Image (cartoon, rainbow, N blue to C red; front, side, top):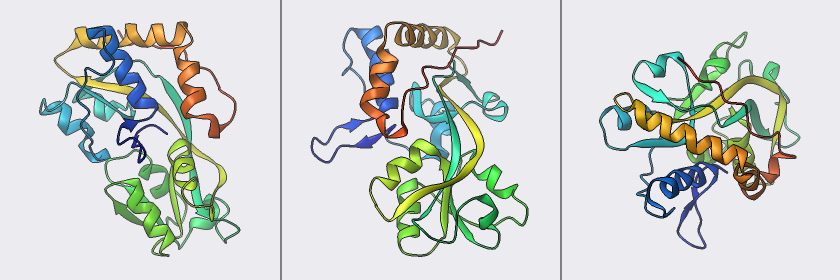
Length: 225
């Protein structure tokens, strides 16, 4: 839902990609005047720190630890962490993960709630969520746990899987910017303000996130001094 390569067109699409294109539109008057660089989750901080990209739009949760190395825009999406498991199987919630195998991705914040469970499960780390999907399909793990939109996107690829259990945590997504570019952070925030105000956010939600249910509306921005 946030970023994938459309097999019909070959284009990289998704909610995060749409936001990146809105920033390109504001900068250059052309939403396609942008170079998209696919990365794994663990690369999000390094590619900014090493100046390999100017912006990271990749379901990027703004944490205190990450703020030591990069800057973040205001939050543009809030979601909950859930569990993806075999439909009708023994895993129905977090309590059922004890003694089982759970897939997660290196460099993500969603591993922390899994490790914090009483009697924590065995965690199998992967570089991306599609690897976790294959591991679940092949029976190498019993569940995947991460943010709901990512899991819904995986479940749409396999009707034998379903989201289960109550939310385990909450994540707030922001756009990542290099630490030495405070003026670009302000520019990005101005674009996000416009996206929230003129209905673009709701339009993008309807186009990309309909499987999650009715729109919750864009989160109200909070700015750090």
